[in-house]
Amino acid sequence: MAYEDATLDEIRDALAPEVAANAAFDGWTPRAVEAAASALGIDADVARLAFPGGAVDMIDAWFAHVDAEVRARLPDDRLAAMKIRERITTLVETRLEIVAPNREALRRALAILALPQNVVRAAKLGWRSADVMWRAAGDTATDYNHYTKRMTLGAVYAATIAVFLDDESEDFANTRAFLARRIENIMQIEKAKAGMLGRGDRMPSLSRFIGRLRYPAV
Image (cartoon, rainbow, N blue to C red; front, side):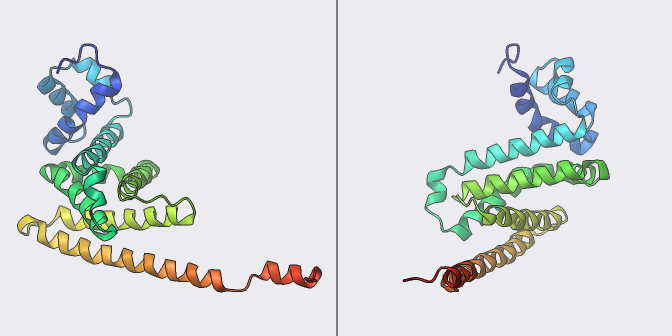
């Protein structure tokens, strides 16, 4: 692909996976950007403009690329044939498959995001990935469930990544087993929440009770 007429966003998207591939060796540095630009035939000065925020912008772009790649590999019609538990599991496992060739780059990225000045940005990136997965899974909640689901999945994904980074088992079997247990926890939580909401519908309303005391039904 020729990039002479590409927008900066298009250049950033193209560079993101190449930068990640080089970050394992060069770190999330301008050197990784230059190597990626050279591989794609992009002017180095233009490539540097794509990441004005430095390492965190590079990581952000890579994570966005992973989000997009997950959706490309798992279109709606494929996910629709699965139960919700399988959808979430497949979405997380697919993310891991995409980042697996660049585990060292991921390790370095997480170290950068863990720095105090990057904690807020890191939280936003984690939320974005969890949101992408829940939306892909078909979640349409707009109440507090929207937030609790993403917080829970974000925590599960972060814990799974910690296992994944040091997993030397065949085909990441240990990571897959860990994820299966955590997904089971999510399903139990969602079931419990549904039960509580169901009981709540049957509980007497305090506001209605007080209203009846003030304005008794005729």
